[in-house]
Structure formats: C-alpha cells, structure tokens
Length: 326
Ligand SMILES: Nc1ncnc2c1ncn2[C@@H]1O[C@H](COP(=O)(O)OP(=O)(O)OP(=O)(O)O)[C@@H](O)[C@H]1O
Ligand SMILES: [Mg+2]
Image (cartoon, rainbow, N blue to C red; front, side, top):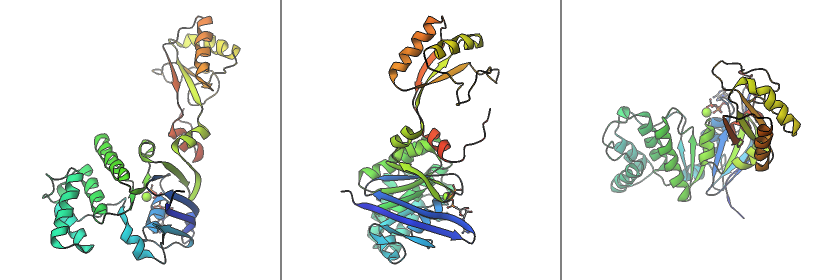
C-alpha cells in the first residue's frame, strides 16, 4: 500500500457567495506528482493555499504529510515548500542572500545557512548570478530562485503554483528537469498549471478542476483513453479529391470527418488550409484499411498520420468547450 502525502476530503472554500472550492476530494501518494489543471478561477490557487495553511477551509478536511491543515498547521508548514503563483523573494537582495535569509528564519546557523544557499544555487544553475540582486534576474532565473527558496528547509512536499507561466520554452524545460530531479529524490509535488504539456511531462496523476469542483481525475493515459480515440488524418493533394475519398471511406465503413470533429463535407474554410479528412481509428489495422480504400479509389493522399488523443482533447471535453473557431 502506498502512503499518501496529501489527503483531501470534501474540502470547500467560500468567499461570500463565491464557492471557490466545492467539496473537492483528492489523494496524492508519497513521491508522486499531482497536476491540478483548470481554467482561470477554477480554484487551483485556493486549494494550494489551504493545503499550505495560508487559507482556512470553510468545509471538509485535509491532511498534508499526515497532519491536519487546520489543527496542526505548524507541523504542516515544517514539511512543505511553497512556490507561489506570485513570487515572494526580496528583489533588493542577491539570490544568495535571499536563500541565506530564509535558512536563518528556519533556524539554521549562519554557517549552515550559507552552505545551504550555496548548494541550492548550484542545483538551480545560479552560482554565477548568486551575488546579483534578484531584481536583475530574468524570468527564468527568478523562478529558479523561487524554487530554491521553497527548498531551503528540505521539504518532503512541495507546492508549485504555475511554476513556468511566462517562461520561454528552454527556461520551462530547465524548470521541468529541476522538478523531475526533486521527484527522483523522493519529494512529493503538487503542481498547478494551465499548460497541458507541462502536466503531461510531470504529472503522475491529474485532477481537472472547473468552477471549484473536480470534473475528472486519473493518470494522463487514463484521461486520454476516456475521451480521445485515435484518428487517421488524411491530407489530400487537392479539394477535388474530397468527394472520391469520402465515398471510398464510407464504402468500407470508416465515415470521415473534417478535422476538429466537424461533420459534413463542406470545402475547407480557409484558402491556405490543406484539405484534410480524419477517420476514427480503433486499431492500427484501420490505417491499412484507409490506405486500401483510397488506393482502390485512385486517390493518392499527400500525407497520412495516425494521431493519438491529446490531453487538450480531455481538457476541452471536460471543461466548457470553447465555441467552435471555424
Ligand atoms: N480572497 C478572495 N476573495 C474573494 N474571492 C476570491 C478570493 N480568492 C479567490 N477568489 C475567487 O475564488 C475563485 C477561485 O480562484 P483561484 O485563485 O483559486 O483560481 P485559480 O484556479 O488559481 O485561477 P488562475 O488560473 O487564474 O490562477 C475565483 O472565482 C476567485 O475570484
Ligand atoms: Mg491561481
């Protein structure tokens, strides 16, 4: 049996009439990464803030590292690191001094504080920048310093609230590598994100929140299996091929759709768009059937691809689907 690092049971938070969080339940096994996904205002930060004892629940219970977040807040705080959505380091101190200060606040001796600060700058790739004021840091450096700040006390659990929002792709990948390293060392991570590829990269399990409620949860693979079917995408050489291809596919029982799930066979809407059809595929054998059907109809596609379901499909299926952009 896996021990849980976090147990949340029907946790709620109301701000006046706003149900920011509404009876959310959630279990995070030790050493795993839980990704909280959801639109702006879904309740992600509210949940993180209650688990890190910054905010009191209005209903339900939660334990972190086995301690109740309301009755045993001090015990919880001793075991967690928090990197907030809105950063918390002192701009007018150097990276090094920020970390030393936090270590001192946590009770380390001067010498131990300096050692810990040095170690963390090293892990975060900030040794060179360590003596510069934090306000001179780039966004990526700043986030790494935030993460370092949350690690000073060697927490068994860290909360990362949108750790890579606003970072460029390479800074984001660096951040992911740092988080993966912490996980390998046994740290449990609860992370909120708007980025589906971030959840896919890092999370062992995903909980999707919408309007304060859990709408679905599971491993990335489970969630994708629930909504997405594989599809074969057929890019045709010309729009003139659409009718022949459609008929051939219908004849073999593989009804095609225009990509995006829009039914019918109206011509592609934008001038530059290459004509595409997609066919739901139950198995790779369906790809072979598509090829044969097109070949029999003398249609030579420009490209054929077997497309796996994406986490985006899950997100859209379980939250409010955006109005069709067509
Ligand atoms: N202090 C507060 N007072 C009143 N309402 C609040 C307060 N904090 C949050 N809320 C409301 O609670 C809801 C959830 O907010 P929360 O910040 O948890 O969302 P979020 O999922 O973190 O969103 P984002 O992706 O924008 O960070 C929102 O409707 C928000 O307006
Ligand atoms: Mg938030």
